[in-house]
Figure 1 (cartoon, helix red, strand yellow):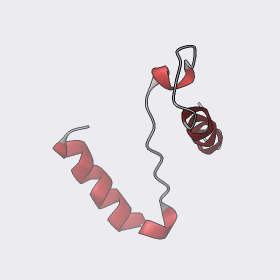
Figure 2 (cartoon, rainbow, N blue to C red; figure 1 turned 30 degrees about the horizontal axis):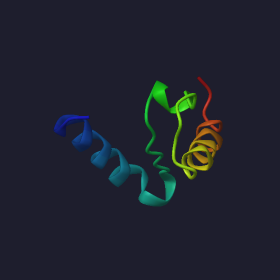
Figure 3 (spheres, rainbow, N blue to C red; figure 1 turned 120 degrees about the vertical axis):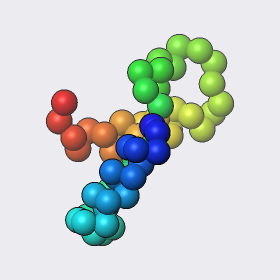
Figure 4 (cartoon, helix red, strand yellow; figure 1 turned 90 degrees about the horizontal axis):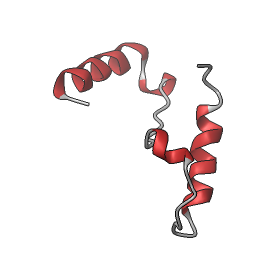
Length: 58
């Protein structure tokens, strides 16, 4: 994400108010591929991200 997109998000958040914004930082497609050995905490983190993203329809 570049400076222009960040500036747009900044203005949007300022317009709607911080209490009306939810930010979810997540990897892209690779997030759902846990076939490789991972750190013990990663599956729980990804489950939490999946739960947060499930609130949004595709």
